[in-house]
Length: 183
Image (cartoon, rainbow, N blue to C red):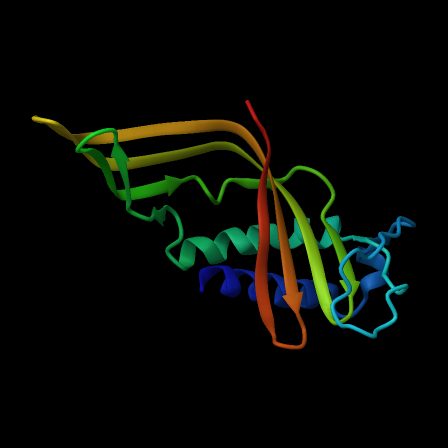
């Protein structure tokens, strides 16, 4: 739900910031990508749009996206509860988790947009200088029971987020999130 809202907000902000004048904001590359999986049987599979660099647009709307995330209560982000069984009769329960500093995001490389058969694909490389997380935990193993808080941080992390926007169904699909680099 939040991902759809964020992405739709992102697209609305792109159109708003451009005021319909994409030539000033968008740089087109000559790189063409072949279609490996055509969306519909019987369609011409030779048509693929070139990838478009939308860095300027993305850089202009990133502060607005940060503001939207904060106003929507997504800083910090609640993490799902998680239970893992350990060997014989043991388990660890992670609960009440939070991910901090999500709004301290920057663009790490070129943001690329491509159009194919009423589908828009966005490759968004993002960098966080610091991501922090914490969980309350319950640890049980045989007769041992421990309760406490686990916390950690990841520094200088690059991720590539790939989104697909289906213009037929008006859906935003998170294709993948790749960890590109963590130091």
